[in-house]
Image 1 (cartoon, rainbow, N blue to C red):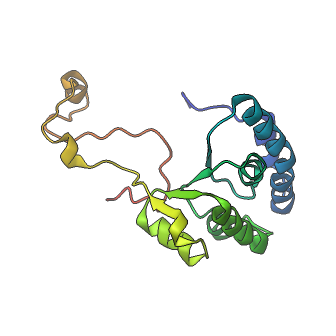
Image 2: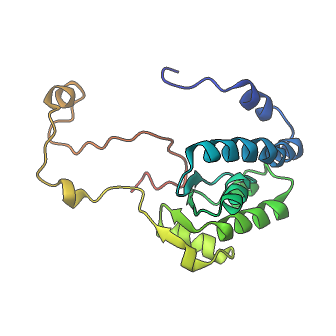
Length: 178
């Protein structure tokens, strides 16, 4: 479809691996990822690293320890549980342990919702590390504002209706019905 990225060779290859081999490959990528991140951080000399959580990815945790800088970890989903629910996981115990380990080694864990914060703390993540940065908008802040768009509204029959834009993936369980 228009606008979709073509997966890389590695991405396509990974999609065809059996679950166990895929998980082992993800673990093995820490060697490459840690080296790349450390090399970039030594050149750039950041004050902190901001990383989006990925299952089995210890690279950020290792690099910030070596550089003695903070790690801010953005967590959008409890990936170990998500993979288990999809029956696409063979190293479930290791996945749950690594998720807890990575989150507990971050200086701050940023979640997109209070329910996700609760899930992480129930999994054993230190609640003092977890902050919620809501994934959405406060409609009251935009009350009374009107962006130009009458032509588009008319074209799609949206006159007098509230229109919300979104860029990303909408999946079951994201609360789109709300």
